[in-house]
Image (cartoon, rainbow, N blue to C red; front, side, top):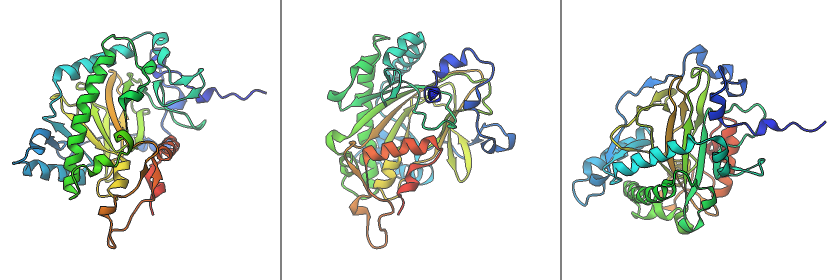
Length: 359
């Protein structure tokens, strides 16, 4: 009898959502994760999301208040909003609109950019779903378009949508703007650690590592009490810049055993999230928060994450200047490409990859 491996290749959730009254069983949370029948609404955050004005933070004078807020945000949540980033609202609006237009195309047009080679072999870049590792893996209620945007000379433009026509130029311009923001944040974080201001940037290795843009699409879901948009995880990269849907919430962050809902942001702030590569580099001083995305019964939701990762051949390890006899290394070193591969293995099992590297 031929091996039935159809479970490894689920269809797009967007098409599924348009045809079903109830989510298939593969998308339903296990009984033990349903919180005794409670809905996945999430608690209201005990205080507003920390907000940092990047222009003030990087000012040569008068940055003290912003530095204190940055330190507090990193120690309490592991993420914060950044305003004063200098990215034009018109560019952010246009990028969001182009993202939405891509996902609204007919399926056959989107499949021209599929992340499956010959319809079977999964690759990181392209349109589709995350990899399915096991037959009992609970699937996420989302589709995504994942593109490598930096280094610029290594872009695979065959995976970049040609429709809408503005998509490629907008993504190029948005990438350049986000790089400037990311570098400013990393320099400020390095100063907090009393390191050379370029120390964290230099941790990325060859050509300052790789940057990936991930466009997330979450269709409306008939059972938001039983289905997640993306399962709990920590970002595997060094740093994430997230352009959130300004009208529909869904992002939740875990702190002290409680899930808190992050409200939509309407003032064009970006959400900055620490990744677990940064957690290793700083020997746990900064940490990558666990987060998830819940679904919505009535509305679709779109977001764009820019993931800043070290070069795949670079070894990630605690920065030597942060170690001494009182603070020995807490994590083993690991090559970035092995770390990414391990992340997907742990992600499929709803586990946190960094736990496997603790000394």
